[in-house]
Image (cartoon, rainbow, N blue to C red; front, side):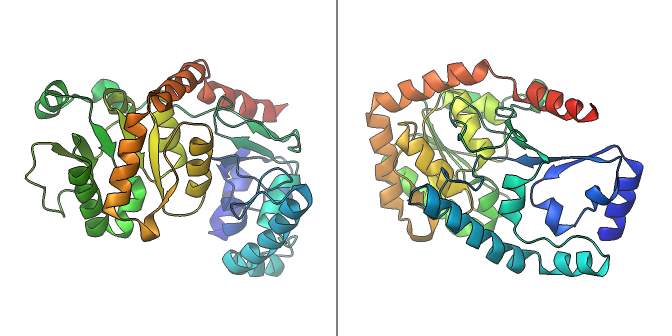
Length: 321
């Protein structure tokens, strides 16, 4: 990976990638003078005084301290091989992943909607929000199956349920959890899973689907139950639909809390100890309160006025200057 990285840096004018790539690979961008660099973050969960890392806001001083310590520990744990390579090649050592991202001069693009995520006052100028990357999915080439259209037309808007990429961690158990919750909830639902490996339930109120364009389907649903990934979270809001987030880890806990605090989603749930009954009750609570839908629709209107892709392109093009 390192050898390939050197070649890429020598052959190209710019290197763009997720924040983690910088240390995992590790790209020697700074050692190639003409190569510009840009980093992506799919959430504004960057270390600093006003962002807390453990679920509790302990104030500016302790927040910053915990990020510093956490950055040192995680860098030594996750990037030990990369650090050895950098030492072998005579490159500067990596001391803290979070600290370097937060205090560096490298353009860092946060692909999160400003309508949802207010910019912290301690971010440097190198950190820019593009807005949600509402990428044009292949909706124009996607034709809704006739049986799905019939399901949508023959009843109240269904609840959409999926754990996205996190389904793969325990496909059978996660799918069964969603099926049980759907039945307890007593609502019409659409469950997205890998049905080639799972037996479909024989239930007229449950429609089983594989991967479908979110932008084409979320708008027909009442609530979106999901894992709290950055893309799914903002896609649900763009469609004007509230969420029930079942966080599996990483930044998903952040999104779950953010949605709940802003009246855009039910109470944050954790996959590790979740029962079908608790999930069903949370769904019913969100459905019973029209304020969740109104809040989501208001955010949707603001997000539709953003163009995250164009903004990101402009930020990258500015690197040439």
